[in-house]
Amino acid sequence: MNDGAPIEEVDALLIGAGIMSATVATLLKELDPSLRIVVFERLTRVAGESTDARNNAGTGHAALCELNYTPEKSDGSIDCTKAAKIMECFEQSKQLWSYLVERGLCERGSEFIRSVPHVSFVTGAEDVAFLRKRFALLQQNPLFRALEYSEDPSTLARWMPLVMSGRAADVPVAATRSSLGTDVDFGALARAMFARLEATPGFDLYLDHDVRALEQDADHQWRVRVQDETLDAPLRYRAKFVFIGAGGAAIDLLDASDIVEGQGYGGFPVSGMWLVCRNPDVIEKHHAKVYGKAKLGAPPMSVPHLDSRFIDGKRELLFGPFAGFSTKFLKEGSYLDMPTSVTADNILPMLHAGIRNVPLTVYLIEQVLQSTEDRMNALREFVADARTEDWTLEVAGQRVQVIKKDDEVGGKLEFGTEIVSARDNSLAALLGASPGASTSVSVALDLLEDCFTERMQSAPWREKLRAMIPSYGTKLADDEALIDRVRAHARATLGLDA
Ligand SMILES: Cc1cc2nc3c(=O)[nH]c(=O)nc-3n(C[C@H](O)[C@H](O)[C@H](O)COP(=O)(O)OP(=O)(O)OC[C@H]3O[C@@H](n4cnc5c(N)ncnc54)[C@H](O)[C@@H]3O)c2cc1C
Figure 1 (cartoon, rainbow, N blue to C red):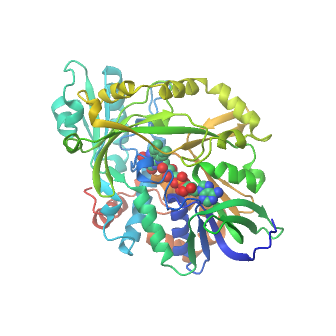
Figure 2: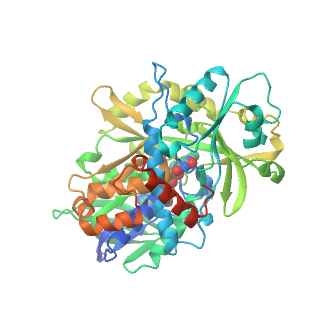
Figure 3: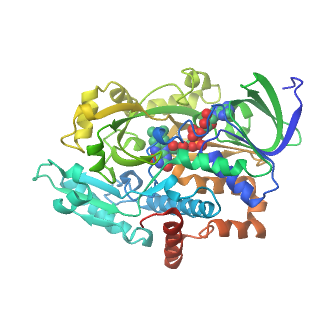
């Protein structure tokens, strides 16, 4: 990797300027302001991939409406473990964001987060019974106590007039609603976080800089080659710690790092599309994020939902996502991304995962082949009188699901997020995209616990962590007084309703 360019030494080098690198860099700089940190982004703008508001659904995932976080098991019982975990994670995110807003992140929290009620909506006797049971179980956790439940069509019409209008009276319906729900513009948040970081000594963000290669030296430091696209010149860096926050491209960079822990991973890209409403009268009639149940065979992230959004401060209405398939790992990636990611290490896990997920492939093919009218009909299950002329189709971000080795079945497709870190803790990569940006704070904390273990346990860092995130190291569900305190603080600083 020696091309004659001078080497710059840094403490931490972060690849990608999405919400994940913004969060990791912010936490590190708060914990140790003396660290020298650089971030490289291949695009000419911050948050241009999945983190951009139009590329994701903007749901502050807190398990208040997403039915896939409370799966029904074969014995009919409902597992609320994942819902409880995601709620705890989102509460941590709100605590860090509140701390940052108080310290000048932006003028008002509403620049990136707004209260939008979260609603789960089901129809038919079987799903109504499921929702009723789910509600009763969630009520046992104090974090979900404010959730409301109703089977009364007139109450539901008050919660979501657009969805209840024109609906057959003889079909049982039920919904849960929470005023704790939020819509988050993760693009605006990441931009604000990077702007704040750029005003800090010892931090630099370079746009239009593509990280091309990484290699580890005997002293465990990383030599990183970056292409400065503005000058068409190579740059060389040496870093004590590298974070691969490259979204869908993380798999390739992890492979390039050659760490043993990164072997055998593959990626399966799932693209997305929204129907976006263009009629202000329709947009005004809806104020909620209404999540339904996923269709049989559908991947968990393609649960249909009708979302009130606030993008660049403007109210919008989006329906989707409709899943699709593209071999790109990033929206602005290359169609060769998936084919060229296949290596001797991951070919077997990928083949095994492919064989085991034929229904998913069939589902994605069906989704890709849908006509505008097919998509409008899916929307009409939510908005019975939706008119085709009020809606246009827009492309969302790419999600790359993780395929990993599995001793029993050869290879598995996973829908979660995974941190892969080097044994010597000098490098970490974030793979997968769900539940995503909402849990960026807890993911970043986990990553720092893996890679900065000693310092994360030191008294000064723990004290600072508790100042930023009062629930850090505790389980909020066990401390109702703390729940009330952190939520009241978030309401006041972020301008939320509940
Ligand atoms: C359709 C869809 C809906 C979603 N809905 C939600 C939701 O409702 N709520 C939620 O919380 N999450 C949601 N997510 C997930 C969420 O958007 C992602 O988890 C999150 O944005 C990932 O952030 P990131 O920083 O890891 O990656 P990204 O935002 O993708 O950023 C990675 C960056 O790395 C850059 N990069 C890549 N390779 C290189 C390189 N070699 N050199 C330099 N830079 C590089 C890319 O250009 C990109 O800017 C959704 C995602 C999708 C696709």
